[in-house]
Image (cartoon, rainbow, N blue to C red; front, side):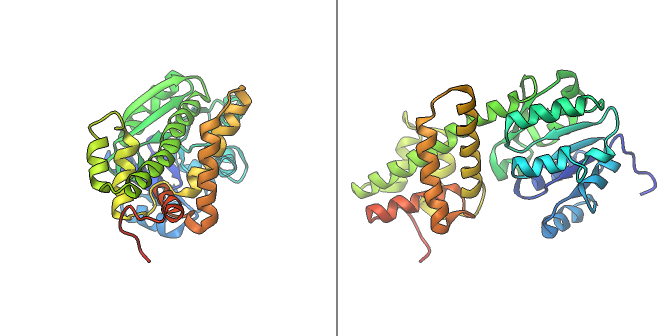
Length: 304
């Protein structure tokens, strides 16, 4: 594209369930977008919406000054952000890298220091809200890093996030995300136990949800998981694989701080059991099927 403006362009690596929704909303706000993903189907989809196709993460950085990394693991993020196979060879002074994945805060602090020597800002900007809110551009973005760097790219972040929280220096965005994820993921396991107990006692699962939703048991986790428990829709939003990855990060991070994590360690083992039973690519709500099998009841519709 002869009129392509690198300074205005947004590059994104990782356009799957979450990154795809983010990219579509960035496009909708009028930003030129260049994207790369190893999943050709995901990349084809965002290109069909108007993004430019890149053949590598390095090509993304060659053509955009604001760069988003939305891959799954710390190792993948390091390859994209801080290696010669990713953004690094093409970065220019004044560029900004937005690390949007839920990964290791300690690693992000290391990359932040390295990129700073090149005049490149790194913001750890994990998001919360799930796939449906990503599609609506209604995520929460939790940002760690330089406040001025955030202000420079705020219009991009606000294209996919209706709430943006700056919580401190590099790594603090991820620290806050781990606090949030610890709550939602341990609560998911607790909700599965509660619904199976109620069903075994003869209660109607829909009534359990109706009562809890207006009682002290109400929570965002309840509203996200209970409909899936009842409908049996375990199509992936946040998968069991991702939950295991996230809870492992929480436990390791807490250990580095000297904080005991009794609940997170227990729920991690529950989700590891679900993973071992072949539920790894399903939504984390599918963990309820472990409890159903052990208790001999079914809370909702299940495929045989």
